[in-house]
Image (cartoon, rainbow, N blue to C red; front, side, top):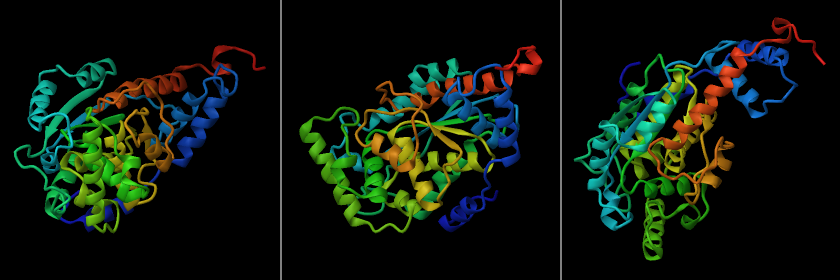
Length: 335
């Protein structure tokens, strides 16, 4: 794929993407019916395994080389006091990721996933979206390209996460712009702002959305998003292009993903929701995207942590589907 220099090129790439293999789905469904268990006994694991088989084009897939990518960016909106932490923490946490000291490092290791971190122009903050679009089209395309290029074509599954002080604010603004309602419906406490901070944050979200008229999800991402959110969207899109299933993380990741769905309906068919975050707005966002979370553990860290944890469930589903014996193979009589 040539580098994206315009959003129309990226839109065209989304429109050209293909769906899962119907023959693989049918064969996986038939195999599932013959496994040594009562029908439906493994519950949602059976559905997940068949879904995975369809995207990988194999009736009996093996999940190998899962990948976790964390993208980091800084936001001009932090100047309005929307976060309980200073913007310098973004760069400090990137170093922590690189040194293996963050939660996502541990969860990636447990899941057997290769993890990498990509910092996107941390010295150049996005613009304050209450005053102007957060990014130019060139800046957005560059961030989408970073995400696209970060995905390994050999990955058997992908989790994307983020680090960016203040980024629950653009995530809330994106949801408000894409799905309507009131700014307060989508705006939460993020890293822990108090009531005064929450009121200020809600004001910022409302002002930003009121300022911009967005034609689709990608335009909203340009006006209200951030580089790390755009990179996540680019990686999720690239995974679809390569038929790599994706496990979505929490509120910020899902807000970035929603921009793809609003640009091209069906763009998230290759994704599962890893977990339900207690961050205000995430439950409503998952309902809007028609995604049922795999886990609900009150996790709100970001970094891809919930998605990485849920990766183990996907691996278990695939292992049961492909590793179990059929009734005929095991010499077990069917009921």
